[in-house]
Amino acid sequence: MGAGRSQEAEFTLLGDIPAGEWRLVADGIIVFPVDVRFELIWRQAAGGDVAIATWDQHFDPLPQGFDAQAYEVTAQGPAITAAEGDQLIFRYTGTNTQPTQSMAYIPNGDGASANGRIPFITLP
Image 1 (cartoon, rainbow, N blue to C red):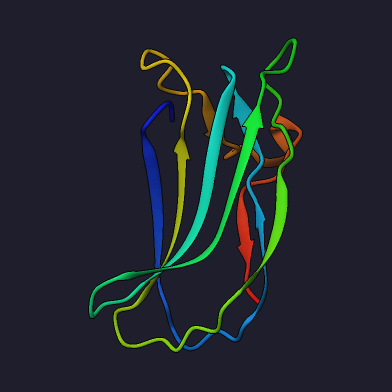
Image 2: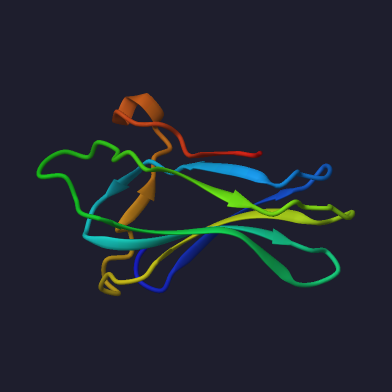
């Protein structure tokens, strides 16, 4: 994912979520220098998005190889009173790479094989 491009993963909420600490692990493979914005969003079925947490991080590629780089953050988030059809959205967006560098940040889908963790979110 490079400049101006974003990816979203959505999950239909099964119930309410209390206010508290949200944890994001987003280890990734970095191919080019990139600034990435990570967002957790409550998308309401009735319309509208509510920001839960946002983080910005700069990454530089490792000097050699394609090992994952660790990234783990936490933030306090609001309580969610879920209605039928509401979703939790995880979005990440590249904000500064060249348009030709379309894959500057790649979430680590290989886990320990790439010396990292598969990305995940821990709810409060």
